[in-house]
Length: 320
Ligand SMILES: Cc1cc2nc3c(=O)[nH]c(=O)nc-3n(C[C@H](O)[C@H](O)[C@H](O)COP(=O)(O)O)c2cc1C
Image (cartoon, rainbow, N blue to C red; front, side, top):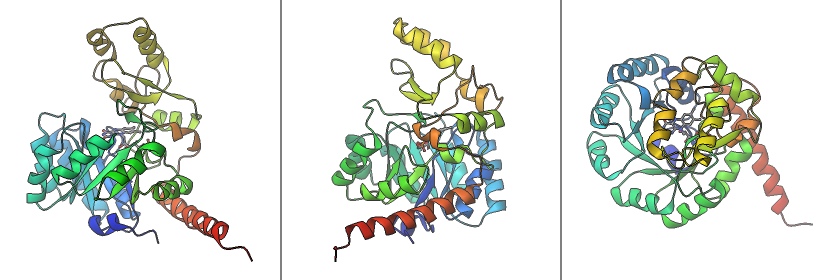
């Protein structure tokens, strides 16, 4: 059921991808998503090359199904990250935060598929021209770094699908069967999920960060960084209040960067300080009300999607 083109390309059962998540998407979560029939993507953004290798060892010890690694291209050692990932058994490299042009051929030459995350039609077209296999189009609802154009999933996906020949995966705001079916209805061939998987038993996030996502409501996230590090969606807390105040007072970008610093995500997701640290979380966090296993997330999403498509199909049946 719900086997789409991306299932064939990635050799997976369900068209569900784990979004790369820094300090959250470690080996255990990656393996759990692959084992449940989706594609686990190691969130390698904050890992050293040695850590990537050892987390991939964990993945291989827990699943024999395909998995990949998310490599933010802003990292100066992106080449080495890709090399270590492929040596560690990744069959897919998901790239983000940079141009897909430089690395796509190299990754293909090493026998792997390339997925690139975009937030606009223009960037999506560049990916297709660069030869990437699948584009993940991510709406502004998503947790973590967002696009500057602030396009929602609802508006972005059909426009990207319209503009491309290669398959598109929808990200941002998907946490259950309703979101899954909506993504497919918009023309996507699958979904990439972040926030829902961040609050699972296998997630690598600190317990406090998981609990904060579970406790969050629809309007508990905000965007900071528009004038400095780029738009970033996280849970509202003491840190975001300080940043927003400084932004409204016109603090220059370099001072804002200093204030935000480099370790806020570690502070929350590793050390558990969810007031002074950054808990990336999407607007769909309000729907995430319980810590459950990855298998439950995937199976529930698929069962709900099956039921919803049945209901929709009965709605469109000709009346007797
Ligand atoms: C805790 C967290 C960390 C994230 N870190 C990254 C990252 O390191 N690289 C990346 O490309 N995207 C990152 N994202 C975005 C996700 O990969 C995914 O595309 C997004 O969460 C999907 O939207 P959703 O949160 O509404 O499910 C992160 C998201 C969250 C929630």
